[in-house]
Every structure is written in C-alpha cells, then in structure tokens.
Amino acid sequence: MADTAFLELDGKRYEFPLVKGSEGEVGIDIKTLRAQTGAVTLDPGFKNTGSCQSAITFLDGEKGELRYRGYAIDELAEKASFLEVAYLLIFGVFPTSEQMQKFESAIKKEAVLDPNLVRIIDSFPSSAHPMGVLSSATSALIAFNPSSVNVSSEEDMYRAIVRIMGKFPIMVAHAQRKMTNQPYVQVDTSLNYIENFAAMMFKTQGKEYTQNAIITDALNKLLILHADHEQNCSTSTVRVVGSSHAGLYASISAGISALWGPLHGGANQAVLEMLEAIEKDGGDTKKYMAKAKDKNDPFRLMGFGHRVYKNFDPRAKIIKLTADQVLADLGVHDPILDVAKGLEREALEDNYFVERKLYPNVDFYSGIIYRAMGIPVEMFTVLFALGRIPGWVAQWREMRLNNEPIGRPRQIYTGETLRSLDR
Image (tube, rainbow, N blue to C red; front, side, top):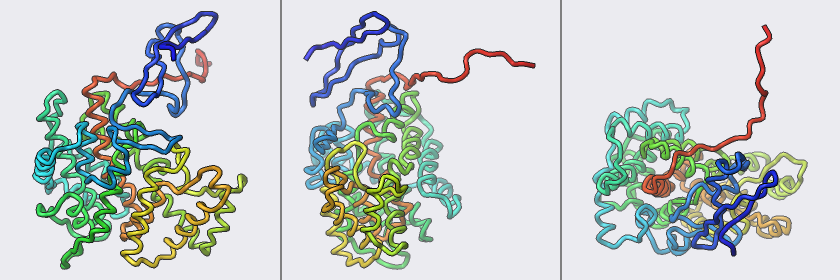
C-alpha cells in the first residue's frame, strides 16, 4: 500500500500522508487539508473521522473483536478482576501482585466521602434521576480537591486516579440507597472492591449482608465489559472536554452526562422499559417481533444489534452465560424476564434477525441481570458509568500526556448570507 493519498479539487492535486495502526487500520492525515485547500471534510457524527491515535482499546466491528491493551475481552472477563483491568487500561501493563496490592490499598484509603458531599447527594429531590445526581456529585469533587492534576507528575496522577476509583462506587451505591430509603453505609476495608460495592448496594439496615459469589462474579464481569469501548460518545466527550485542560473530575462529569442518553449508556434502561411495555400489553413476543420487522411500524426493538458490531457483540456472548447463572441462582420468577427470554429465543431462531445479525447485545443481557438483582431501572446506566471510569481515566490521561490540541470541529455554514436590517 502506498504511503500517501491524493485529493483533486478545482483542478489541483493535493497529497496527504497515510497513518497506519498496529492492527492494519489506515487513516488519511488531513490536518493540513484546510491550510492547503481552503476546504474541510463533512462527516456528521464523525463516523469516518479518527480524532486521535490511541493505544488503549481495539475493536473490530466486522469480526466482533474487542481487546484492551492487546488482551481479548473474553480472557480478561474470565481470568481478571475489575481492578486489574482498570490498572491495565490506565497504565498500559497488567499489574504484578505488588502493584495490585499497592493500587487496592491506595483506593481503600480514598474510599470515604466528605460528609458535605454526602449532604449534596442527599439534597437532591427523590424524583432526581441518579445519573444527574452522579454527574453533579462528580463535578462537586472538584470543590473538595481544588488543586489541579499535574499530568507530568506520576505521583499527582496516581493520587487523582485512586481517588476517583475509591469514591465513585460509594457515590453510586449511595445514589441507590437514597432511592430506596436506605441510610449511607461505610466502606468495609476487609472486603475487596467488588464485594464491598455489592455490600454497599444491597445491605439492608439492621440485617447482616451475606456475599453471593455468583452476584459478585456477575458484577465483576459487567464492569470489565463496560470498562472501555474506544472512541464512543462519552469517551470522546471526556477527551474533548479534557483537551481544554479541564480537570479530570470535570471531564468525567461531562462523560457521565453524555453516557446518560438512551442512544448510548441509557440503552439498557430503554431495554427494560420496552420489556415492561410488552408485558403490560400481554407479553406476546411474536407480535412484537413482527412489529420490529414491519418498516411502517414505529416500534423499535431495543437491545438487539449494535451500532459498531456488525456481527455478534463479543461482550454479549460472555454476559449471556452470566445472565443464565444469575437467573438460575436467584430463582427469579418475573414476567418481565420471561418476556426477555422469549424475545431472545425468537431473535436467535428467526431468519430475519439471523440474516441481519440482529443478535441480543450487552445492553439486553445487562438489563436482565440488573433486574434480577433487584436494582432499580434508573440505576442501570449508573452502573455502566461505574464500569467506564477506568476507560475514561485512561483516555483522559493518554490525551493529556500526548499533549493533544484542543478539540475544535469545523462546520459547513448553511445560513443567510450578509444582509442588513430593513428599518
């Protein structure tokens, strides 16, 4: 393959270098396009635009492959803990036992919320969506940690990372406890990261909480599967906000807001809302599969297919088995989950869906698992955010260390030309 690409415009020929990725991806470096030609590209949604060069996550939507720092997602989900994957994403290497011990110990020291921050969370009305609460609380962390992170200082960077990793799960758990009228609970330092999060989420006042290995394993896998996903909407938001040299917490707060949307992280909540609507209408899954195939019907089947994966979502393959284990262990009998299993069964057998590769995706199965655990539907996207923290931190850190320029897209103006007021 040649090392350059050519563009002809108004009879002139321009040359642009090619950039090649380690997995064979090819990009045309057009950073001098406007300076050379006076023209810009138009790419709504940036579907064909590479905004950066990154060494963190690789995905191939055609083959259904996802890797963190070169490790296949199925191997990490099977063999690693969420904190090990977080360390891998952020620092680029799989941690040694010594590094892991130091990392976990530092996170536990930061696993406490200032009472004033707890009061901020408690001050939100009961009707507030927990994603809004979480975005605000993350932004409020700046008030309690006013000094900016010196990205060239390993010590400053490490301190900021363990701080957000330590405090975020407490904010998530307290957001749920507030919704369910349960009091704030302290961290139990005798537990590991996932066990402690489960206890903070599910412990009932006045009762001892017993760890369930299947539940903690499911949470561990779900957080790993959501930890990063290349340059998606929320990750790009974190990088663009951070490119102005906004702080880590402000950038992550912006990422949470981007994740909130139903076309992004809110998809798993949308799945459950769809299942509830189908169940309320009698639970006839065949009827709704027919509606989904009818181009003239406004019904949209949520949780099937994926914007990036043109094959089976590799994360869905992993979490499907986990969903089966959780449902079997908890012995849940829920008509909503019966509807979900019916849709899954029909989609995997219906030629229309099989031929178009419209398989259940990770949002479909994660929603089922969270529902079975008794987690309120409004919390689904919040748990997505908890899993995505390492990816956001890794992307923000990479962007700052690479000294990337401030994000500033161009546009094609289509408004009125110069005119005067007629008065």
